[in-house]
Image (cartoon, rainbow, N blue to C red; front, side, top):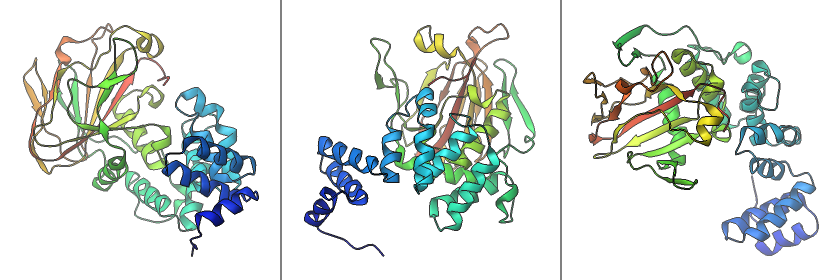
Length: 346
């Protein structure tokens, strides 16, 4: 049971060199909007080996693939020193081969240890992973992150190439994705072609959460692998999983998923495929509409829709123009994942 102490006492302990007090004071200053003071105490706590301070500083450098790899040793150090947050991210990065050799078994074992210690997020993570693997036991030693055999495929259209996998993701995992994404929702953003930076997406009125490495856990890593297997594209070529919430009147207007020439195209290549995971059914309207063939799709929770954005010669497919029709009642939750020609270098 934690005991609350006064700010005066916290400051006194921090000034005396107590690492946990320095980290606590850094958090207090951050909440108060005192960024410089917060950074000073955070760096002091890290210099004294406070594991969560080490983890926090490492996360500041993890906005790129190269940054994730570069921070791997610091994260490993923080995990060894006792940071559960660092231990969970080390598992994610090792499963994704970012800065660590790929070791799914070690990653699962580390999360199982955290769950055994009573860490609730780790318990929920393992429960979702069991659902993905269709496991009803609690023996986590043989849990895998690799996808089970694919669901039965239904061909929706030949031009564009559109297929639907029914019941590809368990309902409990759909609910888990919504739970994980909800606190991270914000306005849908795209790159501003007029000068870099981000801007509101003029075509999309949904709230969106883009789940990068720091937002992932092993259940979400396994889900990404499952979606990638259904799309027939290596997971490393997939962009971040985007989770969208549409309320009445919100929509994704007719658009193509292909991207124009520019630095992002040069780095990662074209978006060759799109996968949509339907997460709930408590809404009306909101169908996925392909305009050229005049097809509307409304997936059930757990269904995954996969379609190609390019023709066989790699050019943008004019028939791939599609829309998320306006929701008329309720809330629609959907996850999307775009796949590139090459490894996605964020």
